[in-house]
Image 1 (cartoon, rainbow, N blue to C red):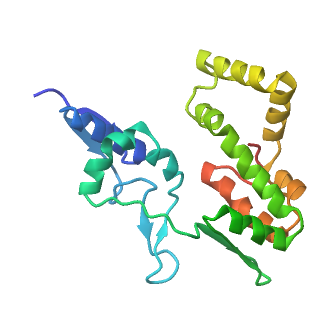
Image 2 (cartoon, rainbow, N blue to C red; image 1 turned 45 degrees about the vertical axis):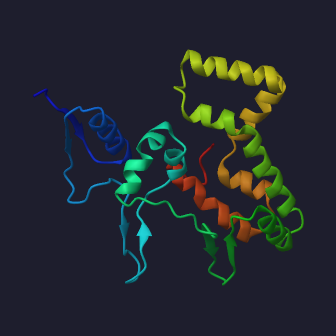
Length: 210
């Protein structure tokens, strides 16, 4: 028997690697020191009984849009994995009692944000539209080594598309801390509070740059 591939840890990357190798008939030994598999991908009752929360799990969208999930989805489905998309993926409750929830309906979000403060809904529409327009570029950035020929070609293509000044302006905006970007673009403090925690999904703070 061939020596197994030894994988230390059972986070999502380790589990995907083990699954991909085993599908190809390779022996795999997965080692985990915790009594629960999955690394950060756990669901626990950490607030009140009956209320179950993800513990640090984030950016599953990067997994379900990946080639790995395309290959593993059928097997995972047979074992009971199902991704559920809530109509209200996040919300905020502030100390003064003000609350705001985000919906999966862009038009409803724009209307709600505009009702909070004039211009905030319009700003949201522009920001979401900008992310859509840059989606291919953004995901390429996430999937490319920083100091590489691939990254150099990617940036050259963007300089050609946007112009050198346009690319410099885009990069300049990326250097803004999240707090400054929110306070400079949105008037409603409740809306700022809704978006501020999202940078935590990437391990950053509201004071960190993009």
